[in-house]
Image (cartoon, rainbow, N blue to C red; front, side, top):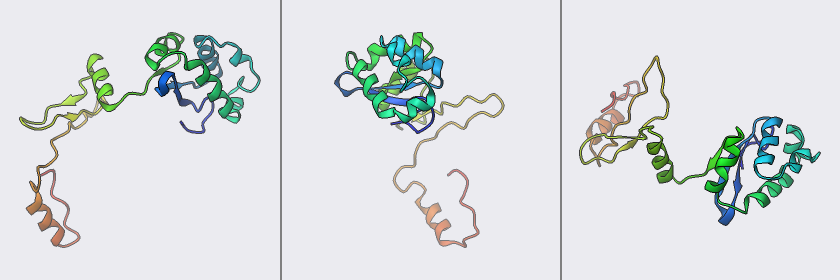
Length: 165
């Protein structure tokens, strides 16, 4: 459940209805107050156990219980819009296929064709202006590079591995 950084970690995965997970990122006290309001529980931000980042970390178990008690009334998809509208980053924890579908809907081109008859590969989400990110290539077929690898493995230890076969 997140890391032990201030706030509610600053990110946490919280159970909603039917055990589905919502990832929430709260990096400061203002965001926590907004999250509490968006969840219809502004009293959480006034609770001394949760008022400051260090308080929330110290009382993390109680905080998670309180938040999940509120979130149990709806699904992650149902909750996402309210905290997001309050500038609190959150979203459902997706399966890989759901994440790729979402990226495609957002126009992020999540997969790259790597040749006819080959399974498309996940595209790097990085977009660098000065140095383009290398696009993925197809994994080798069974023993496709076997001879070159066996030759390299049996050779002197100072021979570099051949560049991208």
